[in-house]
Length: 207
Image (cartoon, rainbow, N blue to C red; front, side, top):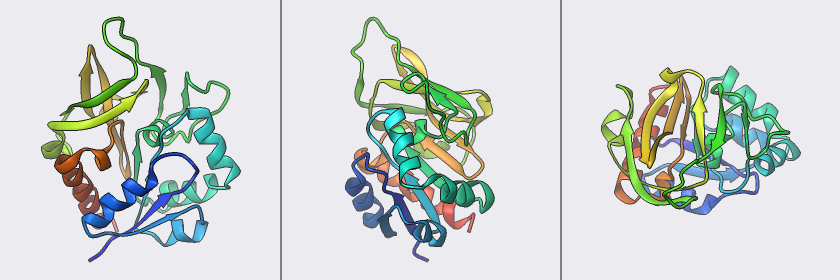
């Protein structure tokens, strides 16, 4: 069964590389900011490269908050937040302290703090499985990162992976149907494609 994926178009992020990756593994994909497309899809992807405050304002200005809340919180549709998309799942961020996040997975986003290594953190790095979870087999591999901020969940049970860049930071989160990765699966070559396939399997199991 082909999975219908809607990539949320809110004006940030390389949505086409995400679309290409999902199509490569056999999904039907739409890039859309239309509420009906969101409601009709089997799962959602919230990508993003950019600042937290701009991301949230774009979601608000495109009237995406209500359809996202209904799909994710009421209908329990699987959603994958990627990079900035993961950070927007939080309550707030130091990058945009005057605006609230979606609040799907309680926590806040703070700036990477490292005197010895370059910020932003760019390149391939290991995403180590934090505990036994649906993605544990795939997560103990290298993925592509580019970010200056990181997610700090309030509940450690929501952590699915961590990564070391001078200090340990959270690189993956999950709460029920809501998943976020600080890394970019669509830019992570074969391991990234395997992760997206697992997300498709996760969706099938939750339809």
